[in-house]
Length: 117
Image (cartoon, rainbow, N blue to C red):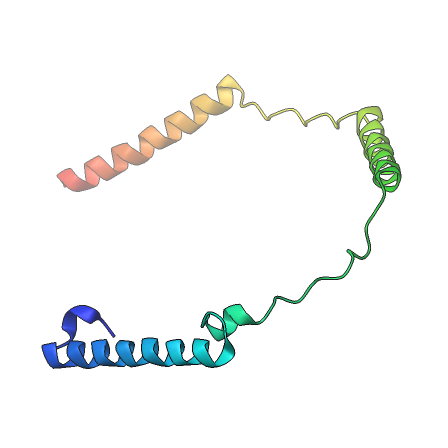
C-alpha cells in the first residue's frame, strides 16, 4: 500500500498502532529484564561448521598443470596439421564474358523494340 494514498484517518490509526507496539515492547522488556529486540534479532544465528570439500594448493596446481598439458597437446595437433588449400576461384574468360554481354544487349534491344511497337 502506498503511504501517499492514505487518508488522514488511516494515518492516525497507523500512528496509534505504532504507539501500542512500542508500549508492548516496553512491557516485554520489563518482563524479560532486558531490551525488547525484535524476535528475529533475539535468536542467535546458527553457527556454520567447518568448510567441507576444500582443495589444497598442491591439488589445484596439479589440476592446472594437467589442463595446460591437455591444451598444449590440442594446440600442437592444430599446428602440425597444415591448413587445407582453398580451391581456386573460377575465372571467366574474356570471350565468355563478351558472349554474355552481347546476349544481354540483344535481350534489351528486344524489350525496347517491343515497347516502341
